[in-house]
Image (cartoon, rainbow, N blue to C red; front, side, top):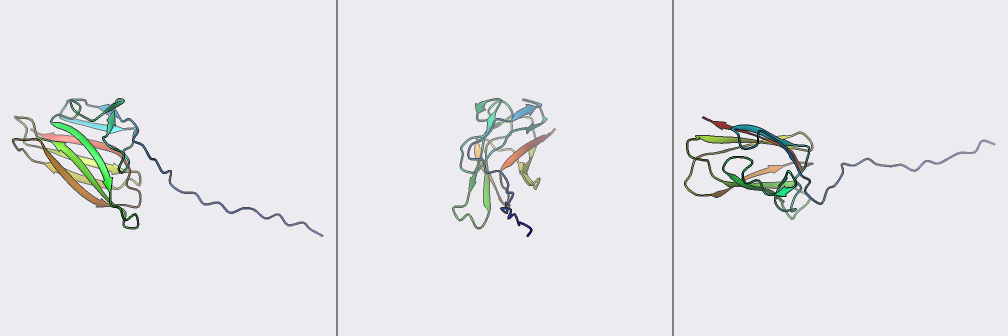
Length: 138
């Protein structure tokens, strides 16, 4: 008689992070750059760059970035919040965000006289931000 061995079925899932992880920066303080090798998760507070909370002095004119999510977890609704303004002499800034499913979300911020909070809503099955690129015009 042959003996049967039952194997437990396992399911692979995406890792679920609960805290932000520090990003590395290329192009600090310049017109073009990127943040990578970190992640920003929903409702975990300010972005962390070079082990510091917030982004002041790293992307010109931008003082903070954070991510929130809709309380209804079945909808996968996320909101990126970007606080800042365009420095004098610049026309606008293009920000490109990549989530952990490598979906791309873009935001353009135009000149204004005061710091403002700019928002970008998106839907994703992943949602965590793993990379950010910026480009200033002019």
